[in-house]
Image (cartoon, rainbow, N blue to C red; front, side):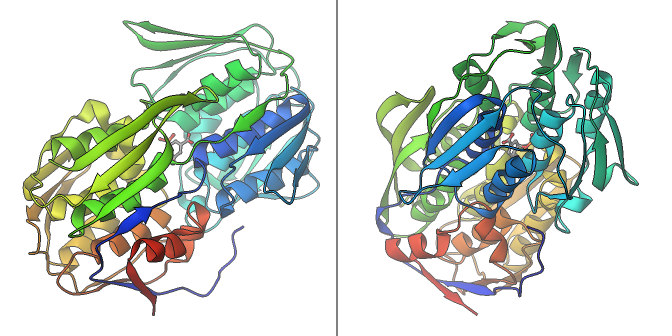
Amino acid sequence: MSGHATPIRMTSHKSGPLTGQADVPGDKSISHRSLILGAMAVGETVITGLLEGEDVIDTARAMRAFGAEVTRDEAGTWHVHGVGVGGFAEPGNVIDCGNSGTGVRLIMGAMATCPITATFTGDASLNKRPMARVTDPLALFGAKAVGRSGGRLPMTIVGAADPVPVRYTVPVPSAQVKSAVLLAGLNAPGQTIVIEQEATRDHTERMLAGFGAEIVTQETDEGRVITLTGQPELRPQTIVVPRDPSSAAFPVCAAIITPGSDVLVPNIGLNPTRAGLFATLREMGADLSYENPREEGGEPVADLRARFSPDLKGIEVPPARAASMIDEYPVLSVVAAFAQGQTVMRGVKELRVKESDRIEAMAAGLRAGGVAVEDGPDWWIVTGLGHGNVPGGQTCASHLDHRIAMSFLIMGMATQEPVSVDDAGPIATSFPIFEALMADLGADIRRG
Ligand code: S3P
């Protein structure tokens, strides 16, 4: 929720070697979707491995406000009694999605074709982020949105009483926009068609198929054309949430830059629409391997093993890979600082509208720690100094952004001087056990 907790300053000191097993939490994207689709099915969906971070808890609370029964049992398993497609009740109060763009955008989509009105808000970070990318296509279904200037939260959505199906080409590579349109399409009669030019994470499509919706994806010259047949009866599911590759990125990158490290990160979701970072790290010369590749709950998973990699080299990251690693650029830029030569990242305009402007936030902190960074509207270049040569010694602003905070704490494990972040509190949105898990591996991160 959008509280204003006291900032938690943390400092990361030279660490290691990092060794052992890192059991990172459940996937954030899949966790949000399992609660929302569970709420739209008829009957009881059972979810294990749900990420119990603030973002997802806010979505669970929102689903209750729309009429679903959402409970957690002693074993940490979540139960969702859904109200069926089109069955959302009108919430009695404002829906607070905290820090979560995924939560608010997906929920807006899910309620936009129900004959109800809901008002959404979030924290200072979320209330700055663009919502027109979602409300524009939702208007095509017949929903109305009134928010602050620039299409920002707080915002009220009046759902369409008589929704019509939509054909929509997503103008930015965004799984949140794609998913909002698909979730809205669930309660529209006929076929809703979403076209995306660049493939983004496809968890919504996979999960909709699992819940029994008729959904077909075709690769065409236009891009990926996704056709959903509206008004299905969604059948409740048993969902095992794989562990989050975007969270795994932090212990993996920490191991790669910290001398002597050897870390195993088991059971990581390796959906190809999410695995771009690991391909990039290997191209840079990282010692990273996949063990036991298998499929669980419709998603590919494997165990990841990362070892200290002293001879990293900078590379040009293919822009076509951007969507599959969009959340990993902050921590990649840290690894790039320890490589020899330049790491060039292009086609990443979306980084400017995440929980913070991630190019600006990372560039400022890296420069303060002695690393040269150039940047433009949709690109940035980090000039690596090579292992052992990165000065550090800076305090970085986390800008209410969990991934900025974690990235700089990883950096401090291998810099000459410690690295501090002004507020590590936001880490609880996606990786509440980060501090304990990193300490268990041998990291020296201290409060203060
Ligand atoms: C997400 C999609 C991405 C990503 C976010 C999670 C999702 O955002 O950055 O952390 O679960 O759909 P965009 O859709 O805005 O690219």
